[in-house]
Image 1 (cartoon, helix red, strand yellow):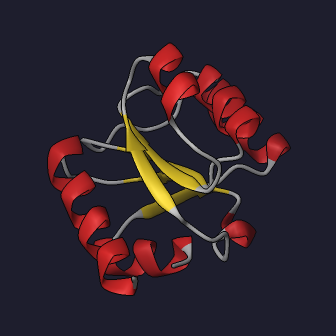
Image 2 (cartoon, one colour):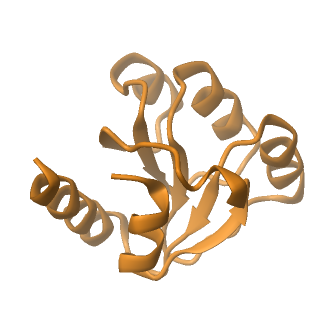
Length: 113
């Protein structure tokens, strides 16, 4: 499933790298502890987090995540957005809490299997 499908089905707001919405999402990871995300997430994951600082872009790039979704209507910090544009990392914003968003994305991915 691509990011664009998730964006449309869950009414996400795209904040960066709108040209990368065809990135394939193969799984997901929900977490705010950066060391945990680095240790346990996988390439192709969509990362769901509350963190808004620029280190999320560095980790998403390092782990080759499909993109990042910020929960609870959190907006990326200005320097985060600048780095995401430079690194071409899709960042989206959801008004949903992490628990609910994670469940919805899990169900969307499960439907495709």
